[in-house]
Amino acid sequence: MTYRSARHVSGCVGSVLRSPLVESVVVVDNASGDGSPNAARDAGARIVVANDENVGFARAVNQGLEHATASRVLLLNPDARLEPAALGRLEALLAADPRVAIVAPLLRDERGRLRAGAGRAATVARRVGLCVPLLGRAPAFRPEYGLPSGDTSRAVAEAGYVFGAAMLVDRRFLEEAGGFDERFFLFAEDEDLCRRARLAGRRVLIDGGAVADHVGGASSPDEAAMEAQRLFSTWRLFDKWEGRLAAGAYHRGIVSAFLLREACAAAGGTPRSLGRTRRLFDAAVRSGCEPLLMGA
Image (tube, rainbow, N blue to C red; front, side, top):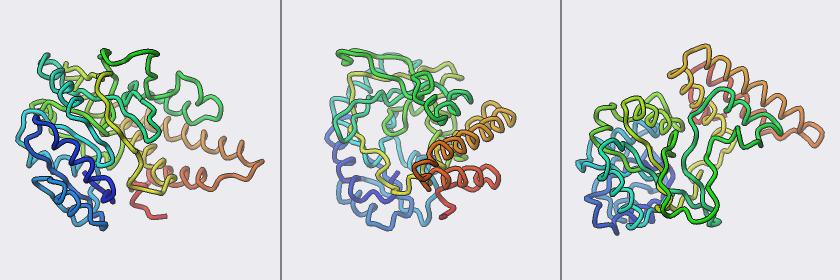
């Protein structure tokens, strides 16, 4: 799926086409308006679907799946690149064990730093605690796994969930699961899918020997709206899996945590983005409108 990704999509498409395992590349563009569809075609994408509006990540991926025919489906963000050797490792893990539904690589940022690209299943306490000043720095509240010291190239581990930036998925599982849940406009759709995999008795793995380069956040410069969207999608996750009481506790906890952050920052001048993020998130929960679509 692309959204304002003209600068990155060529490198993404080119990286996967170098692998002999790739049959074809399908790109779905969410009304980017920056030439992303043409860039994808020029890079070699076989099918490019150009939406007239931004329908969100989950729905766009489901559109792309309608055009995919392979038994394995590689989902890769336009600002990510996966080397052929890494894709081969992921494919081998899926082929070796029919219980594996999803496998993902480590992620390497622009500075060359490796991240796990996977995290612990969300809980209300963990996600609210992450937003509380000082408390959120504690390792117990970080959703993403830390990497072990030393060589990770042979490490394969179970994960609560893997990030949607790069994942190889068994097509049969995707079809049985009904694809991505389109209630998630952006963020949390990856954890939701991994939860459904585990509920079905399937495995979700992270491969320490496979690495994808990932810029991250390349499609939107509005950090406050992006953070509000992340918080709102997590609210949807709790609402779906744990019910209204848990979602309500999360809503109140996040608003309180942000008010505390604003109070702590007041001495140096409260960053406007904190208050804007809180207001966008609160308005989204109350209205059901996606923060990224509010436009203010």
